[in-house]
Length: 574
Image (cartoon, rainbow, N blue to C red):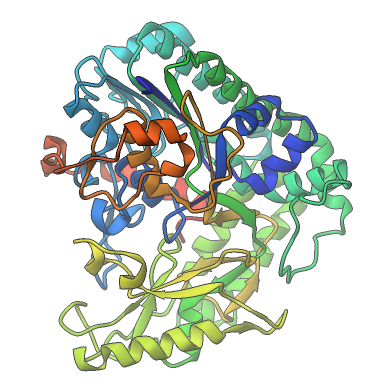
């Protein structure tokens, strides 16, 4: 029986990128982990975004059960929203379940754990991604913050901001080192039964530099057949193939240091194994290339399912288009501003100016509209549910089927290729009490070069991205590796999902699995002796945490604005 568990999360990690480096000997600690343990792809949530996915890892449940269905809480048919926080996570998280069984938990830099909560008697929590800037209440117990500062001198639980110049890359290296210093210190000074921490930086890094990373990898390892390949590319490479290589010469050493830091963290965790501990390496999603926008509202409008009200902005009447504004912002480089204004800031300026062209939607005639970028879905404007619904309930099923059929057949005229990988009815991929607030239709963009957009100012369905936009997007296939005293070495896990992590962790500690978890125990990862002597047991789920009853908003208006700005930099919001 495993008496302790370590979980190391690596946001955005993908075997598409990491396995070629393992084969080249560049990630020796990851290579050892894969050889000594069981591993395989890990299917993320639908859609594969960090808010939904990390909460599913924490709870063993899908978004329709744990309630975090996007980065914000949506009001049907309205643009009003508030960003999610830890009290929004419904039911037990893994640390709540473990606490009920007398286990101490340390959770460090796990996304969406702000405000932090007690993690069992003797446990602690340091919040991570989505912690507001400037807050000092990011630790539980509160006095842990001062202890961390005494070790590091400076600490920011969520320092990443892509709306900065490329010269900010050294901060990725520095903060990764700070976070690992804190992680090691807390593990040594405050030992617990289950220790969970997440490396967040690589997700931000890959959003920014995915083209450079994959080009550099292919250039340095042409003999590696599994090196990442571009699929369905529709836009010409900017200034030819040498452009990313020139950027690579400048930035690659620091980027490589970030991945080396990740590998060193894996090596440190392997060093903590003592014959009674199981280590889980997990990512919330994978990554892939992106070069184009898929403007969903524009597509709906072209098919007559979304209608705009009359009237245009003054800029539109002058003949200025969204694309024209973007081209104008790009020309700012003629004044030497690139050195002082980050690439994503330039993209944000262009998008904000482009928003001035927006026409209001005529909801009384609109049949369907796009969800947010990070919902990758479409809502039917249903009467009785939406404030100005136009679709009769009796027509709902037929309307949805027509939209799904057209979406499945949609072809990008620039490439002649299908635009989406799959289309789903929401009830076919989600179940739970929060299903009514989710899109009626989900679509997948896996292995497609598009980022979903809910823009109402686009003049075409497909649009090549600006060089200032993100270069990488999420893929639904993350990674999972498990090593421990009862794990089958060298086993390939082929059917693992992110909701399976929590129940498998509990099983490794010989604890019962709450009956409301959607995930299954990955029993195939364990040897026959352990499986015979430790049959899977179920239990009634525990009560919701008191923090979920919190009625007051967690974030101030200023913090919501800042969070929106930073999520825009990642391509998560318009």
